[in-house]
Length: 124
Image (cartoon, rainbow, N blue to C red; front, side, top):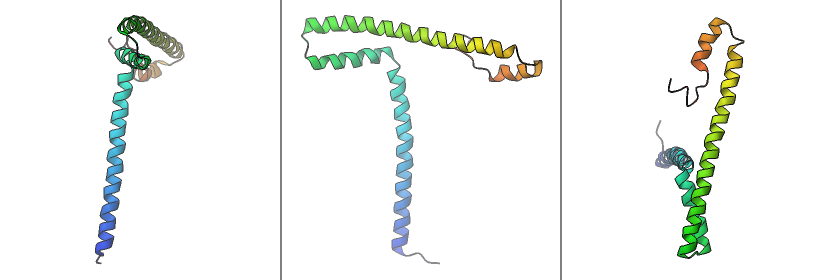
């Protein structure tokens, strides 16, 4: 069976396109994850807020005051996020305790392996 040059070229072009799509998809996932991780950083929050405030063309005095207000807001948001994470894990741990009380000894052994481990229990 002999394939024509046109068929071979078409197959190679299709393969090239599919490989490019796959590589672009994987690169997109990597970039998306790195951006998401960056957005979780409070320093990024401040930088983004200051960048938006620069659109107002502030003078140096205003810029310094904006920075003070932004620092205060970022600190409050960081505390709020930390408290929220703590509250979530308190709820999860309470549910885990309630579930454990309903389990048989065999089920408890399996559950210990699969139960969610929070930031504080991961260090134990």
